[in-house]
Every structure is written in structure tokens, then in C-alpha cells.
Image (cartoon, rainbow, N blue to C red; front, top):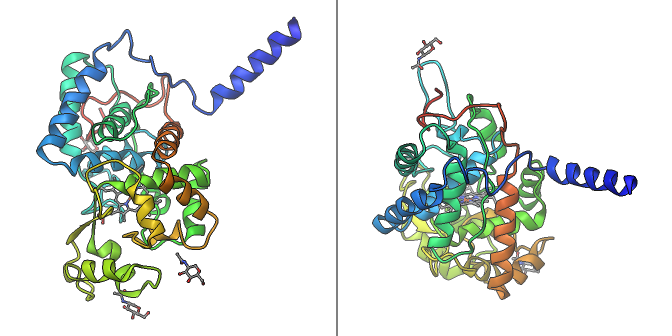
Length: 316
Ligand code: HEM
Ligand SMILES: *[C@@H]1O[C@H](CO)[C@@H](O)[C@H](O)[C@H]1NC(C)=O
Ligand SMILES: *[C@@H]1O[C@H](CO)[C@@H](O)[C@H](O)[C@H]1NC(C)=O
Ligand SMILES: *[C@@H]1O[C@H](CO)[C@@H](O)[C@H](O)[C@H]1NC(C)=O
């Protein structure tokens, strides 16, 4: 009896330690209208611009990989503070901050001073995926907002599109994410756009690329560095505003847009996962949702750590 009790307590504390005190019901009494407040704003942002769903999803990834999911990404630079927005993976690339501001304003109106910007990013990412046809999941909540940001963390932790498979595996592993988590999460590239600067060397120099895709993309992405750097192309050439498993079908056909995308199917250790997801939309959907929950568990600030920011762009 006593031994059973001790082992149950031990088990619970082991399970609990990975995710601190996050829980799906965190705001159920302090902000019962939270999800019904956020979702319509996400919906209207996506209705005005379909790409915005992708941009909002990406914000959560770029936040979580730098000192955990703590809204550090949202902090603007000030004269005495450098944020993460000018880091190489973010500058001229991450977008959607104005939508996050709108959501925060709506949430503050409903429940003043209660809901963190870090949790808003988690809910928004989930809603964006669900609205575009992807899986839905219960989001764990209770994160608090950082009072600092890390430009160097953003530069070091978020992998560039030139990454090799082994670099990708090590960047995800450093965050406690497995190969399977990584391949599932990379399926986020079933939506959204990339700039020419992110795929130029792939379409001119990689050999494991479908030649018609290379030709098509070259027509709007000149080989000369500095020319047309910002020209956009869809990460998933089939259905760039639908959250499906076409990304993996593309990889199997050597039609990944980024060098890093195609690394996941390039005679390496992740090929079989890519094949599995290319053949099973439901397996991809459930593994993606599980990996998003796991990514959302990265080093949250909880309890009395950090703060609940009044404005997501600045510390209180
Ligand atoms: C596996 C490593 C990853 C690499 C190397 C990578 C790299 C990139 C790059 C280079 C772009 C285009 C940026 C630009 O040209 O402006 C991009 C876009 C995007 N990434 Fe990733 N990414 C990775 C993983 C992820 C993950 C885990 C997620 C989310 C779960 C994600 C979500 C997105 C989305 C949705 C877009 C399109 C954003 C938009 O259209 O605004 N990526 N990524
Ligand atoms: C910079 O720091 C000083 C001293 O802490 C503070 O008074 C000031 O408001 C800060 N400026 C900005 C733009 O945050
Ligand atoms: C392709 O590779 C060559 C040789 O390494 C290099 O000089 C050239 O700049 C590359 N082209 C692009 C578009 O990356
Ligand atoms: C895998 O290796 C084969 C044989 O070397 C090669 O023809 C094929 O293009 C490679 N596939 C990828 C995706 O790199």
C-alpha cells in the first residue's frame, strides 16, 4: 500500500517535470472565454490573407526554440534592449506581430492582466493549423512571459535552410525533440511561403531536385545574390494554404523547396518517416499534434517566474 503510493507519487513527479505546471485547464476559471476570444481574430486574419495562418504557426516555433516558449520573440528592440526580431532567421521573414497585438487587445478586454503572450502564441498556432484543415488539439497553458530575449539564441538555435540532416537533428535534439518530432513538425512547410534568398542555392546547385521545379522556381529567383532576394514561392507547390500531407509527397518526388526540406528525404535516417507521412495523412496529423504539444513544453516560465506582459511587444 505505502509502496504503491510512493511509486505513484514518483511516477507523477517524473511525468510532471518535463512540462512544469502547464495544463489545458489553466485559465478555465480566470478566463473562461479565452478560446472563444482568440479564434475569431485568427479566423478573420486568415480570411483577409490566407498566408497569415502559416506566419502565425511559424512564430510559435521561432519563440519556443529560443529559451523556451516565453514570447521572447515578440519583444521589440528599444534603445536599451535588443530583441530577436533582427536575428538572421527572423529579419524580413517572420510576420504576424500585428495579428498577435490584435489578439492580445481582445484578450485583455475579456480578461485583463491574466493571459500571457506566450500562451497566446500557443493557442494561435493551434487555431491557425485547425482553420487551414489540419489537426486540432488541446493546448497546454500556464506559460508566463520573459523579461528578456536572446538575439544570439535566435541565430544559434533556429536552423538555417542550408542545414544538413545531421545539423537539423542536432538543433532539434538540443530542444529535447526527436527525429520523429522533427520530421512531423517540418510538415508545417505544407503551408506558407519562402523567399528566393532561402532557396536560391537549392534551385541552382542541388542535384536532388526535380528539374521542372528547379526551372519553374528559377524563373522568379535570379541566380545573382542580391537580386530578387525577397521574391516568394510556396513551400508546398500543390496546396500552399491547406494543412495536409502534400509536403511529404513533394519530398518523395524531390520537390522540397528548401535544401533543408529535401534533407529529410535524401537517402538518410528520416526517409522512412517521410514515406510514412506521405502515405498516411492521419498518422501525420496525429504525430504533428503530439509534436506541437511537445514543442510547447520547452522550458516554460511558470508560477511566479517572468510576468504577464500588458503589451506583447515590451516588458511591463
Ligand atoms: C526543420 C527545420 C526548419 C527549417 C530549416 C526552416 C526554415 C524555414 C525557412 C527558411 C522558411 C522561409 C523563410 C523566408 O524565406 O522568409 C520557413 C518558413 C516557414 N516555416 Fe520553417 N523551418 C523549419 C522548421 C519549421 C517548423 C518546426 C515550423 C512550425 C512547426 C515551421 C513553420 C514554417 C512556416 C509555417 C513557414 C512559412 C511562413 C510564412 O509563410 O510566413 N518551420 N522555414
Ligand atoms: C531604458 O532603460 C531606462 C533605465 O532602466 C528606462 O528608464 C527607460 O524607460 C528604458 N527605455 C526604453 C525605451 O525602454
Ligand atoms: C553554386 O555553386 C557554385 C560553386 O560552389 C557557386 O560559385 C555559386 O555561387 C552557387 N550558386 C548559387 C546560386 O548558390
Ligand atoms: C539516393 O541515392 C541514389 C543513388 O545514389 C540517387 O540516385 C538518388 O538521387 C538519391 N536520392 C536523394 C533524394 O538524394
